[in-house]
Picture (cartoon, one colour):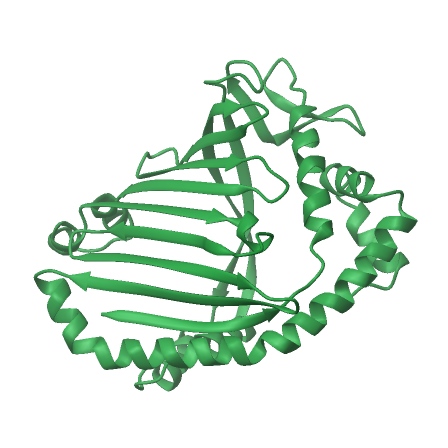
Length: 316
């Protein structure tokens, strides 16, 4: 089964992104850690437990870190959620954006906080690239990420997951998890430099598989004086029950993809106009606050800073 789409992005000024990358690398390089491994807030000289160095020396190959995420628990009213699913998920055309918006309207915080830990191991950190392996504590999945440094970097990702274990962890029946699970693998490459090349080229490509399905795709960009013309395609194949499922749902999948792609490209001009307005406003704030590196530094280490400048500059 093949999907394809194409369209144009108006060219925009991405110098803020270019400037932010070295500033973020400098923040990473300057991190210090206490005797218990907790990162030290450079503004207050106090430890923060959201990031810990648990083994090795910072920035040395083999160093292991843990990131603690605290997430407020939210829950939708069960009766309203079921009614919403019957209304929006039962037909041939599923508007996932509308479903997400409506679901958010009926979702409320419970007052509880969940904590989760993600581990990452440093493989390389030098002038050429930054490479890490990210994994969850259960080792159900891991992702190798490498960012090759450049004015516009190239990002290479390779991941694996024990789909059987992940399905069983979500209370899926054991027989179903074994039948459709297995080992899932995937790779992806994004080369942002293609946006700066006169002739353009392949800006992204990806491939992945699980037991019953395989997929691959790529996107190319062709620069013009006023636009970036993008063409993307993907192919999805199956075996056994996967092949049967694709046959049964082929029309629905194609219709949903075409509808979503058309809506996306139709919204590009509005998004581009909004981005330009926001970019100009951010540039004004950055200049007034002493430069992008200063804003990034304070935003990372002072939780109240972003709220303060939002009020100060009347940002939305």
